Length: 154
Image (cartoon, rainbow, N blue to C red):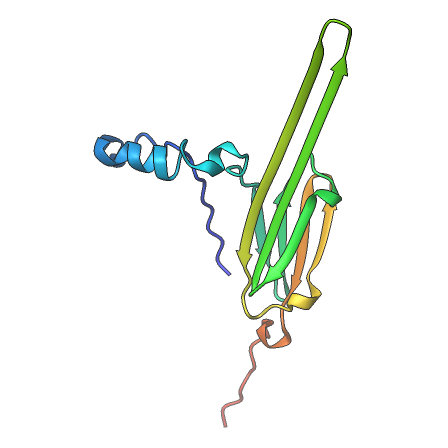
């Protein structure tokens, strides 16, 4: 499994060549990928950091999601894809004689990972501890790395 990190930024890297392509700069950054995209405004643009480590017999996946609780997560496997989402809402209201103060907070994210065919989907375990959602994904026997077989030359 190969891990490729990617960060999406509404304005991209302003020091690259596409900065000077003004015809496409605002179309791509503002409308398609950036500020005018609905996901930018509804809280779903922030993707939590993700670490994936492969060992001989399993994968370890860690997702940084501080501030959430276990009940905020929804984790499913569908068509070989591990889908992780979380949503948290908080509202607070204070009423006094002369004023009413209302505050609210909303956080949400979605991440999806394509699982290789070499894993045991039915044995995936998830644990949330101190802001880290971690998964242990076991490999099938045929996918585990075996020591090299020595063949004697006769």
